[in-house]
Image (cartoon, rainbow, N blue to C red; front, side, top):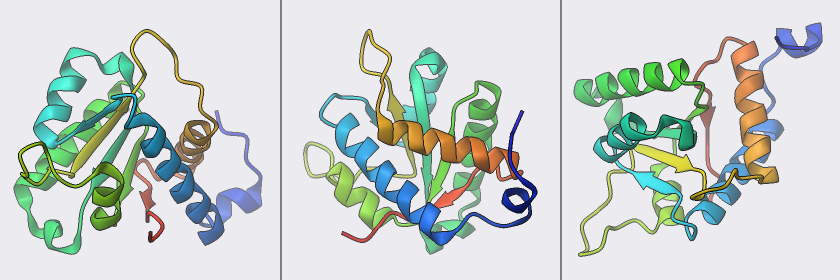
Length: 159
């Protein structure tokens, strides 16, 4: 149940709020990466979701303008979104893949570019992650669901 005022329900989320969440998301990624709590790639994410969905704390679906016409990618996104909703995993759509690539390092070992269309953030092994930035992102996702925005869009801040 959502406890929001009429004013909060009737308006869109402010740009300031979105910027704050974008910065929080950047912090989440920056702290999860050295802990090995990031899964990158549509195929790798699907495998991880299948094996251990309870360990996933956040799902990021990233696109650029040219990806909007990729039917296969949109089908993958629909299936991943449905699975995440069914398993109470928060989802965000990220529009700036260049910034996401910079945060994640951009290339796999061997120089091959990463598939950044789906990124999962998981709990560190054997613990529950208590991070204020993650709490802020999860709160934003919850507020968005109250506004019937099941997959809110975030722009990562330019670096």
